[in-house]
Image (cartoon, rainbow, N blue to C red; front, top):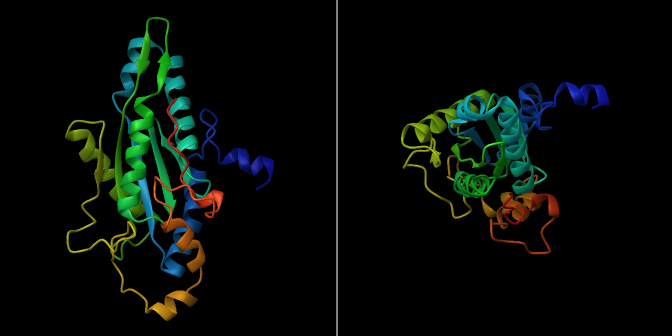
Amino acid sequence: YSAVQRLAILDELTGLNNRRGFFEIGEREWERAIRLDRPLAALFLDIDQFKQFNDTYSYAVGDQVLRLLADCLRDNLRKVDIAGRYGGEEFVVLLPETGVLVAKDVAERLRIAASSVRVKSDLEELGITISVGVCQKTPDLTDLDALIAHAGQALKHAKNVGRNQVIISHAITNSQRDNGNGEINSVPTLPSQQRAEHPGNEREKALHHNRISSHDSGIPDLCKYPKPVLL
């Protein structure tokens, strides 16, 4: 991207991708995941009771909340993850090479990190919480919009049952079993020889052997989830 093009896809307030930028980059990642038959997960985040920050304190405080949450995302995601401001107080994250169980762990670490954020106002110091919906690419989801929509439905459920929690989309059914790599199987597993020759297999090993608690020096930095950062 040129400097002008880059500005067109960035959210001015938070510095994250705006909605247009998120989908431009995200569509390429979706197509790659489909072409190579790789896992892909999405998070849909919302700041709980955000309207109160604007109404009770000021819009400047509300803007501060948005910027601090954006910082929290940058500090706690990998370089390969794609984060964007979807609109208002809603944020979306695309997690390449990540199944739903690891994605849920990532969502939980973001939720915990967000709860440590402190926002300064003229009246008092404030805290925030977030709710998160999680969904994984499955054969039933035909495009990126559908993946994000299902994560959004899971987010709504999280808000309805009390906020400040992580909910996995109902699109991930009990009939789909965990394959041990934090991914729910939804397609046949390739035979071992074919898997060894499958494009991107080395990247898969690096990503999927890296759990939230793993920081082995042999894993490329862009594939690591950073140690949790509490602001």
